[in-house]
Amino acid sequence: MESRLTELEIKISFTEDQLEELNKIVYRQQQQIEFLVNEVRTLRDQINGLQPTEFRSLRDEIPPHY
Image 1 (tube, rainbow, N blue to C red):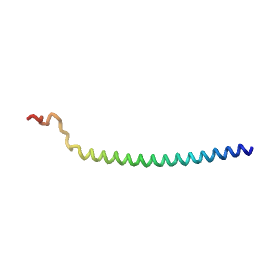
Image 2 (cartoon, rainbow, N blue to C red):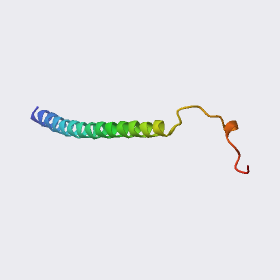
Image 3 (cartoon, rainbow, N blue to C red):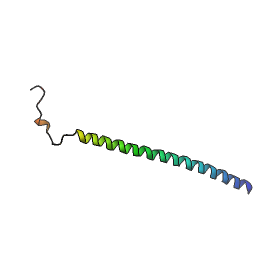
């Protein structure tokens, strides 16, 4: 009976350590997700700033040899 109790305590200890480690990993991943979301938002704003406000067709462009 005592050995079973000791085994359970050991398993609980390992489980708590694993849970703590997983919590740290999830926290870091959430930070990375937030960083990437901000990066995508910044890139989207930059792309929107580069696009012309009116639509122009390539047919309206003068070829370089003229």
